[in-house]
Length: 103
Length: 382
Image (cartoon, rainbow over all chains, first blue to last red; front, top):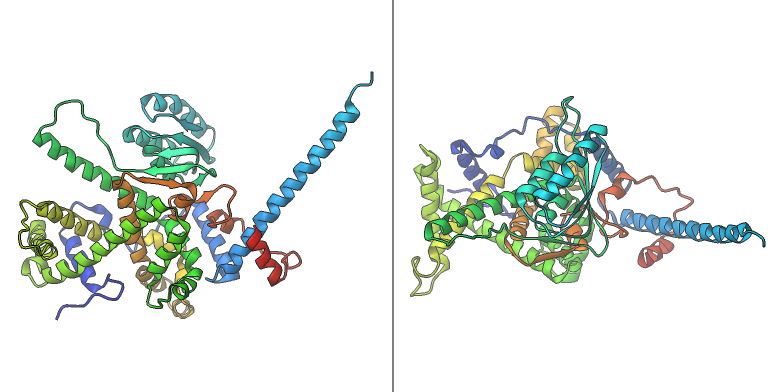
């Protein structure tokens, strides 16, 4: 009896067909079975992998809290940047007045 | 550097000294600002090749940050997505479409057939290149929204929805009408993969020529025979014919679609998609099982575990990229592009979350973290 497709629709049968296709295909290099060759990762890739792991360790797969934290942090940063800009503008205003040459 | 206006030889001539000079100064990242309606794919490819050129010392290629400031259309959209980190300015737009040829000479039947073949081939090529380049972004989108899936099931009143269907549902709520249409087309294509796999391959498997082909054409012969049956079964009208009602076209499409599915089923692209977000796809039990195994065996076992949830995602994304490459109405907003995993971040928005937020994340100072009620208030107003 033929194997059945699993619930996600990508079961052993497709694997069988793929193996057939792989065995006979000489043109498509992209389908080489190279699962034993490790993927090459750059330093940036590795740093990102570590960052992802850190977030996972802190929050798990439920990112509700992470998303809330990021939004809060972004809002906070925007608020601080605005305050700084306003303070700079205010100080600049004071200075321009005091720097105005006396008649 | 700036890519503005038409992408053509003049632009390549203007940018080449600039790119070469930046690369010889250092191997630091290069930021490419884009505001272009596209142009020649050949020249866009020339720019891409220059940007990723190695040097004679074998240093790593420069990381490319792409940023659309106004509009990135056609070849410019491909350049945008090609960036190692792709950013969109708020209000900018991204437009993908199929390859186009402008013909000056009178068109003959032979020439038209050549064009059809060539257009199909180039569309496939660009779709696959887009899929390979962006799949990590799409998987990231999935990993960072999966906590919303159960809520989506509850709201839909349908607990039988698969995770992928929930993901589509969550995306659908965030996207513009045009982007939602592209998503629906991708679902249609994806369902067709499944239909063909189920019907054609299961019937083909009983033939000797399928099991033990002596040459590629043996395998294709059996599959084609079953594709003919599938097309005839889909068109039940009494007067329907292959000759007059587009049956041959459907046959061609189905056959190529099946090969597209087979060529994407496994390989390095899928492995790459599996690697970074592994933790978000493995259950605690699976992680414990892996810890007990020897390292090399654990790596292989882990890959097998990850392929199960990520493979449908990868194949769905391939279908989406083909739809984006084939349609003529895929004008996406910056936010659409971010939700669909075509870019990483929209400047000034925290939703959807970006990979950058992972990279920059630091353990929050307990003193600065508000109580639960204040936290939800901050979320609602940010």
